[in-house]
Length: 339
Ligand SMILES: [Zn+2]
Ligand SMILES: [Zn+2]
Image 1 (tube, helix red, strand yellow):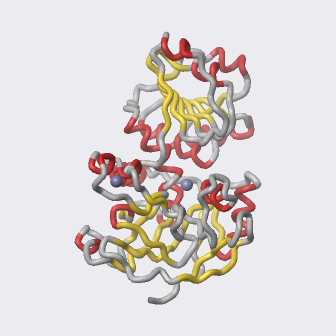
Image 2 (cartoon, rainbow, N blue to C red):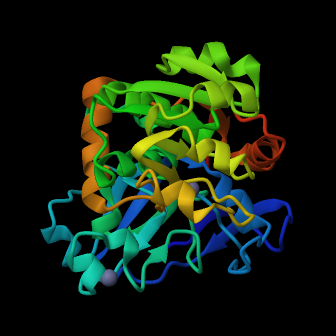
Image 3 (cartoon, rainbow, N blue to C red):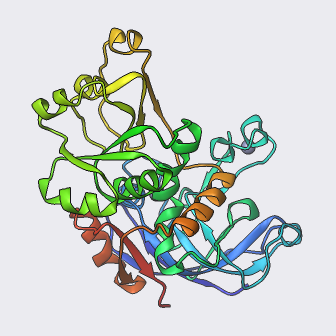
């Protein structure tokens, strides 16, 4: 087996350096994908820093890969994938397909799910390997150079629209207009919803409207929030910082839903009565199922929805990661493989 060229950090926050590894023989259900592009996600940064205590080094990040199938195991080649076909590999690389969650079609909740960058080499590399179920065909009409961020950030904000039964007549809100939030606006606008963007930066109002928001509002001005009280069916939280939770819940209509996709680090204090009286819900979700990724790709193709990205050659990975850490990503970064 030939060696795979990759970029790896040997320690938390350590510089990324060229790294080679032998992936070993391909398993029967596995697919090898030659990486063309890979998005950079905030989770790559958290894993690099070992923020969650689960990182193994040398660490090869990258879980928003777009590339071409270069090898298929003997079972994988019976699953509709062809050599040379363009596919995407996102946050998850393996799931068992026989646990209760897998059988229900929620492979992302598999009890033994194997993420692409946890104890597995990711896609800031020439090649990435996954189970065939997570090598998702990319439709012709989806621009491969921008599509990477759909595979983690995109599906994370798309799957709640299906799971939480969002309908076009819903009034929806998005808190946090960044990598996730800007994709949420685009998807929900195309879904038919009237979207309000909530952001702490008034500089982002105009761009939020360009993404499809009908309204842009301060996320921190308690007075403005009070005026919108009781007017939303669904609110997505796409930030990881604490907010004025009671005020945000009061934005919901009776029966309204508050949904978390941002990993807010502090507990969320909520009065039971704030939920009980209006029959309101708080929920959260990680990425999405394989079928939802397929649905997202078709929806993105049909509605011409792509994340807003900026490109770095993969060889400038250190610069790209610092750009992300500094909060300067506009709005997602894609690395172009240049081995
Ligand atoms: Zn499973
Ligand atoms: Zn991610």
